[in-house]
Image: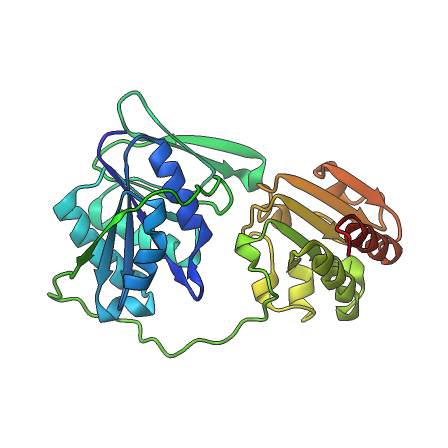
Length: 323
C-alpha cells in the first residue's frame, strides 16, 4: 500500500494499549509507512513508548485531548488528516476509538470498517477488511471505495504484536485551536473491579457463568485464573445477578476479547456471549450439563461436576508449571 498508514495510539497507565502495537505491526505488513499518532495533553512519554514499533510518531499535544472525548479527538485528527493525507488510519476496536472513528467517517466522508479481524490490500491499493457478522457465524469482506483515507478499527488479538525493533522519529504537533471546545466535561475516573491481568489484553481468560450457582462459585474461576496467570471474565447473567462487575462481562453487551485460550466454567454458550469471544484461538468448555450449547463451539469440552473439575485442573496447571 502506498503512502502512510496511521495508527491512533491510546495510552494506559503502564504504557500504550497492546492492540495499538498490533495495528502498527499490521500496518507495516501492508507495505505502507507505519506512523503512530499519539493524542494527549502531554503525549511525549507515550510517544517514546511506541517509537520502537513505528517508522514515525506524531505526538499531538493539546490540553483537551487528555480527557479522551471522542468528538475532540475526531476534530483534531480530521484537521491533521486534511493536511497530511494518509492513505489509511487504523485504531483499536475500543470504546474510545469506535466513537472517534465513527465521527471521523462522518466528518471526512470516508469508509469505516469496525472491529476487523483481517486486513490486506486490493490490487488498486485500497484496504480490504474482514470482520465477523451475524454473531460470529459468518465473516464479511469489505473493500473501500470513495474518498480516502480508509478507516478501520482492529479487534484486539486479531494480529500479532511486532517485536520492538524500530526507532521511530518523534514529531511534536500542536493542532490549531480554532473552535476546538469539549462539549463533554471530564469529571474523574472510577477504579474498575479488575484483576492483575487486563481482560482486553489477556492471553488466557477464565470465565464463569450461572453454573457457578452464586458469587462464591467465582472462587473456582479466580483460583484457576491464578494458576494460569489469566484474566477473569463473566457472562452477562452473572453480571446482571450482581456476582461480578460489568468490567468483567464478555459478550455483545460487554467486552470483546481474543485470547489464545478461553476457559468457560458453567457458561451455557448463548450466542450473545460467544459474540464477545469468537476470535479466541482455543476454547475449553466445562459444564455440568452435557447438552450445553457451548460444547458445539468449543475445541475441548468436559461434561461433569465443575466444582470438582476446576480445582483438579488448577492443580494440574500448577504442577505442570512446577509450582
